[in-house]
Amino acid sequence: MGFLKEFKEFAVKGNVVDMAVGVIIGGAFGKIVSSFIEDVITPLLLTPALEAANLKNIEELTIFGGVKYGMFLSAVINFVIIAFILFLMIKGINKLKNEKPAEEPAAPAGPTQEELLSEIRDLLKNK
Image 1: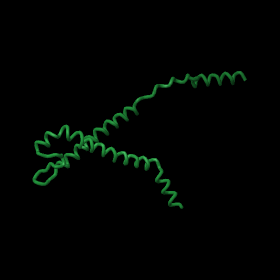
Image 2: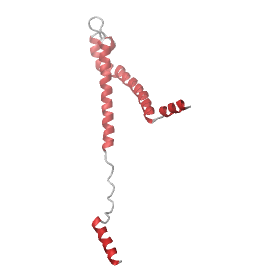
Image 3: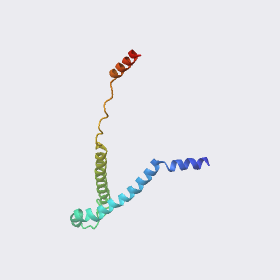
Image 4: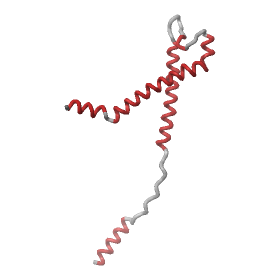
């Protein structure tokens, strides 16, 4: 039973769960970016270049008869878009973190150390 208990504690720790959620969301986000590249960027921006090369898809670009640099170019475009979006997200999160909450009104100032000592002295004198 000790092994199962340890595994349960490990599996439900916040960091493991957070990491799992991040991996799942990252996979879904990767699919969104891939679709954005293939379905939006390539048709709008790269279509003239691809038509000039008599190609339908960026992945078909080759050099020296077989080196598919189009696949590499597609991966680079994907990376740049993902990096830019993550930069914007982190910048927004940091901006939210750096916003200072409204300052609370200062607590009324209490007596100073000298005033307290004077009161104690006066009380002792009156005894």
